[in-house]
Length: 605
Image 1 (cartoon, rainbow, N blue to C red):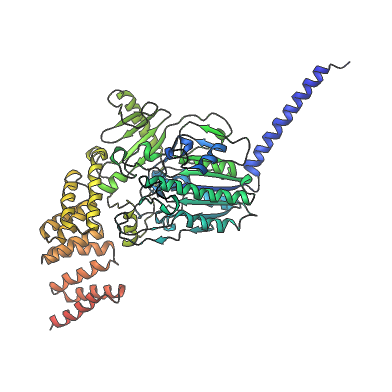
Image 2 (image 1 turned 120 degrees about the horizontal axis):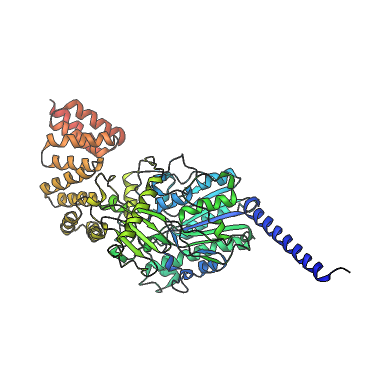
């Protein structure tokens, strides 16, 4: 007589094996071979993790994102590799750190090189329709992230500056317009695989309380208004997926590109420091797979990991070497090993001539290389207020050794240059990305520490506000304090020259412009120096900087015209005529050049 218990036991074992084989096969099919899996990538500009309820933020501020997090996978400690929009997005799309793709600041001077594969390019090769919808000029297609997209919608609405919050006018568009464009495109992708990237810029400065939506709820918290606003826009995207039965076969990723200091450590916005206020970002993945939901992962991860994660799930054969690692095993429930994460900022040097920063992040510690090194216990000191360098020098030395090894292993690239118009540079400047520095030539320890320089940068921004109001004398008083505290601050020297010129202190303006040229001999600075020499009737001294400016930027009308004026004053008639004619070729209606040609004809008689 057969053993009933043994038969039942074998049956249960067989059923378990069948279930395991089924689930294993289903998982492989769903993540690697499923023909209809879509990807919706939503990047939230300037979004701190601690503003979302899922990260113990204010309750009720982000109900949509909190709901998504409750069903998805939450990476509790996700970090940007750099606290700036363009280089952070470039790392997300390429799986490499800023030194490896070459975009390290939002200068408007460089673009992503064509030698690096990008996520959109690879997914399009695997049959995906690709669309990108971005909310600010800092991600304009001229900077190279458009590669691989069937549509790259970067049409912006230009604001009407100047205003105190927006001194030059800049190009951006509110999240509603971005999502409108994305939804229009998505409506035509229902029967195709799609990769849709939506970038929402609204939490960025200048902040907007959105009174038309929220009344006076955020009258004293304008940054939070931007967070609440993008939460609503994310809700519109998720609702579209639900209404069109796309939510069950769409991978949704929501991630911040960097945070915002909000005056922590005296930093008003972001870019300068590598504290969690600007590096720690939300990261939520909601996979179309019941086995990969409702998990919280505490191991530190980086935005650089998103590229290999997506490719390992959707196009594993295309996964080439990158600096990130796939998070797919962690999403399946496996333990994710702790590895030190790299982050950097060249923004202190580019903006005000302070030393660049580099850091390593582990599950407990953060080490920051600066002229005064920093070491923080992130479990006991979340606010990064107690520097442990003095108490733990041996640990700091070990972190520095590991950091040097990490830097040595990076494959460095120089990003190709692009030409940005003066207006485009002003637009970036209006968002806090003025730039103007050059690569540091001296040791970082010889440059000011941004912890000391930040107070002077804040003075500089106050001086900018005075400039907008035409208070040139008061602005110059502040700028003199700035350059005394941060001697390598190009833009402060340049603006000081401008203020002194307008207050008719030509000698002081000359000295300020000369110092600016010493720091960065760009065409604009050399033109200003040449102009101030001409105002003092120092024609001989004016010609060299003006010739340098024209050599650097042959189409710079102001430099060409002033060079023509200098040549005319020296009776170098042929040289002057050539300069004026070049001006008129570039700007046919430029009347000063026409008038100077007539004057020169009379002077030659």
